[in-house]
Length: 209
Image (tube, rainbow, N blue to C red; front, side, top):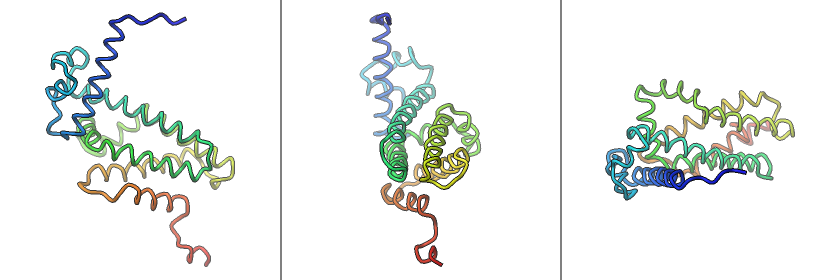
């Protein structure tokens, strides 16, 4: 039987969660320039010094928010992969989920990547490959594709290599959307992207030749 947690532990967890949620709200509202420890403290309704009881600096706080955010995405993807639906329906839902996730947190990811990868895209690529969240995502995606290959819904292929191909392609497109001031509606991009990935590049006229 699990021992009950002390009031101090419960209070600490509550304060940390409140700070993380306040950070996300400030980033979404103020963008990069307005995301300061002062602004976060005001949003959370606490003294700035209280934040430093739990986080060394803004960078550590942003990283903690990122860990919680990526875990949230992985949990949502678990539901997509496990849904009782045909492969193509779950695949479209997967791409919709990824686009909605990053589009809805655009300012946060702009700030996160500027902190994580100050040396540019090459640094980002190397560090992403080392991320346990990214590795778990690739495992999820590979298992999802492997099941579709086994059931005959997807052509025979190496699901691990296909997962890497899809992951890196989607990542590049999502990164471009983060950098753009205005992007095509997510629904439009999801539609053409899933159409190409599931149906191929050739037009109907070309396929019958």
